Structures are given as C-alpha cells and as structure tokens.
Image (tube, rainbow, N blue to C red):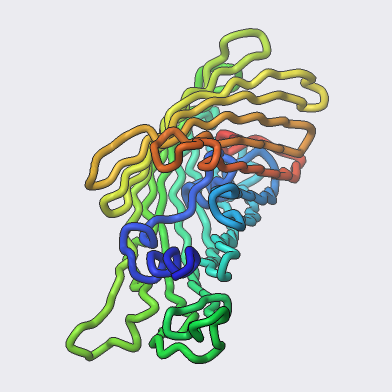
Amino acid sequence: MKLPLLVLTFLLCATGLSAQDYHFSQFFAAPLSLNPALTGAFSGSYRVAISQRSQWGQTLETPFSTTAFAADFKYYVNPKKRRYKDAFGVGVVFASDRLAEFNYSVNQIMVGGAFHKALDPKNNQTLSLGFQLGVVQRNVSYDQLSFEDAFDGTAIYVDGASAEALPANNYAFGDYQLGLNYAYSPKNKAAVFLGVAIHHFNQPEQSFYAEITQGEDVEVTQTLYRRYSGYVNFRLPVGWNVELSPRVYAYMQGPHLVTSAGSNLRFLLDESNAAALHLGAYVRGVGNDAGYGVGSAVSMFGIEFNSFLIGMSYDIGLNGLQTNRRHQGAFEINIAYLGKANDDEAVPCPKF
C-alpha cells in the first residue's frame, strides 16, 4: 500500500485528522477566516486579501497547501452623523485545503456580514457582531490510487481490477459561524482587541460514507466538531514611531487545542506614504487527548505601503514527528489591498 493510500485512509476515516480546520499563522491577516465579526473592520471602504500557506513540502512529494481569498466592504449607517459612527460590513471568503498527491481538497465558500456599534461619542470603542453561512465541499480523486488486489504479481497495477468499494468522491454540506469582537482603540494610545467565535455551529455531517451507509446496521458518520476560538491583542506605543503588539490566540475543536502566543513590532518608516515594517515571533502549542506540548515556532515579516499589506512567515516544527525538524516547516504569504474612502475612520482591527 502506497503512502497516498495511507494518507487517504486517515482523511476518509480518521476522526482526529479530518475534524480539524485549516489555519493561518498570520491569523489577523485573514480576518474573515478568523472571526465573522471582523467583516468590514478596517480603515477604508473595501478590502481584498489573499492568503497562501504551503507545508510539509519536504515530507510529502507535493506540499499540503491552503489558499483563501476574501473581499469585504464597509458602509456607515449614517455617514453624515459625527457622533456614534455605526457601520456594517458584508463580505465573502473562499478557502481551499488541497493535497495534490491524489487531488484531495476541502473547498468552502462563505458569505456573511457584521454590524459594528460605536460605544462612545469619540468612536474609540466598538462592539461588533458577525455571522457567515455557506457551503463546504470535500472531494477526492481515486485515479492515482493503487490497491493490493489490482497488482498483477509482476510489475504493474491493473486499472479497474480492484474490488475496493469506495464511496462517491464528492460530498457537500451547509455550514455557518458566529462571532463577536470588542475594540478599544484611541488614536496614538494603548489599545485592546478582544474576540470570540464559534465555527460549524450546526455541527454538520462530513463523512463520505454517510449516505451509502444510511439505514444499515452499521452507519458510518462523522460530525464536524464545533470550533471555539478566542483572541486578545494589545497595541502599545513604546516609542516615537514604534508599536508593540502582544497577542494570544487559541481555539478548541473536539479533543484538539491549539494556542499561539507572541508579539509583533511595528516600525513607522514614512507617515506620508503610510510605510511601516512589521516583525513578529510566536510559539504555537498543540494538544489532544494524549497531552499538550509546543508544536512550532513562527517568525513573521510584514510591510505596509500606501494601501498594500504584505506579510510573510515561516513555521519551524518543534515536535518529534521528524528527525529533521525543517521537514515540518510551513511557508505563508498574505497580501491585502485596502481601498480608501474620503472618510476613512476605522472600525479598528489588527493588520497581521
């Protein structure tokens, strides 16, 4: 049995592996994937962002890749009103997890919105409530798989000779998520951002075998665990043009727990061109029924210039899964463009 078939077996049948969601190390760079309440939480009128993550490239023949594309728009409820500038945002996010070894993919498209309520006349405090709903599709190709009973005993595997009973290779289900975010962000002063979210609120069925085994003595089902997440981020001016941004992000999904803790430093280089440099470092802890430990360390580098944001990061594996830890590395890049408006007062949100 080849490695792709072993991986496929886990993907189709193993609850622990397939019940976990995709994630990004630069979690604030993919805000619509992080928390629906961050839809429309930015300075400007619209935001377009793309995230790409590639991992395990030196362990698998082809890397496991995650891609997300998002676009959201912000509108003020009463743009002429100077006090209590409430706003709402609408957005869409498309995400795809893909293992090219045998064209296994999980694709999702979510549409949603958020309402941002100003809590004081200076609009320094904002409470945001958001939601998303959409469709998730799981797909796998059997063309590149070989099974023992298809081996002719000499040198080749005979196409179509296997008697393996495989389910339909395409399965889709509805999904939705909810989120809440609080921001206290006075200009040029210390700020704090707090958020919580629930993904897969409806706990949908995701097994390829659910339909073909329905009504049988043994039904194969696999409910997608709810994912509960929360984060806290501070913005602390520590110099004339320097900001420290310590943060913690954690989520729990079934028996799995992931935590990320670290900080970014933002150096303002040119205020007229909105040019700034970001440097960051994090440690990610992972846990399940077997225990909890440090999984990886993350280094991050980012650039702001005018309306563009570009962030790059690399994960260094710290667990014992491979002797050579660089085999566990993951490279990630995030690019965003913020369309400015005449009145670009922000519903605040961290950038990376």
